[in-house]
Image 1 (cartoon, chains in turn blue, purple):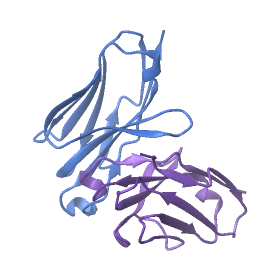
Image 2 (tube, chains in turn yellow, blue; image 1 turned 135 degrees about the horizontal axis):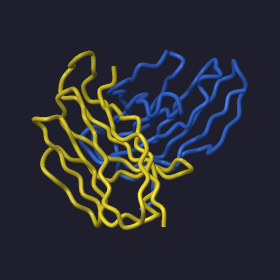
Image 3 (cartoon, rainbow over the protein chains, first blue to last red; image 1 turned 90 degrees about the vertical axis):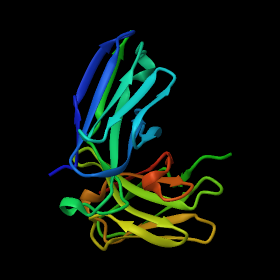
Image 4 (spheres, chains in turn cyan, orange; image 1 turned 45 degrees about the vertical axis):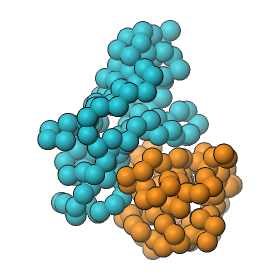
Length: 115
Length: 114
């Protein structure tokens, strides 16, 4: 059982393409995080959201609480966007064996953008 | 403002040994969380410390322990190392509780157990 499912697992795009990465979760949450991990291991927090939509530069994150689904969009993708994108959620209750207050992670989406 | 620092960056140990990893959070941050990342399991939550108290613990055996000091610096300890403990160990700090606050990650400590 995995509380967080991401799709696709791998994604290849040409520079300039519009990218969408999806995250579905099975528990009620207080917040959802999108993280970016570059080769070598460094992780950067991109967004934390609990409702609606957030935008930062070419990145847009949306969440639909009723459908338990979030998407990360990258407009005008660039080779420097190549990284692993990870979704993480914080459950609001001890639902289905999950624990309050800790983060549960998806397995990540490996994005490769070719010039 | 300096970022999250972790020491050491790389570590090689043998089975049965123990190891201590250190994490210094961003100044003013009171929460430190530890994560293990392996190719097989992905990122997994180890524990979170807030104001020197363990607030949450993941599903890891008792060989994994941690603590937080009054200056918010944190250490994690793994005793009786096993081959499967080889992983990237990441810590992250946040102003308040990690679950609903933006987390800032350190560069990680890559542990290899031989």
